[in-house]
Image (cartoon, rainbow, N blue to C red; front, top):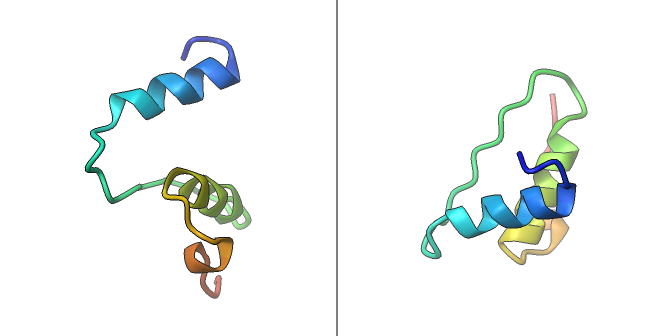
Length: 56
């Protein structure tokens, strides 16, 4: 963590290999899959409906 959210995100993004095609996000509570889906959509330039499915 750099301490600045924009810098943190950019740092993490540049560390990942360009050919990476899998994002694993850990979550422990109901509702945290929404931020994970948004991150996946942003990182992989997908439409949001492609990144979500029926929840618990």
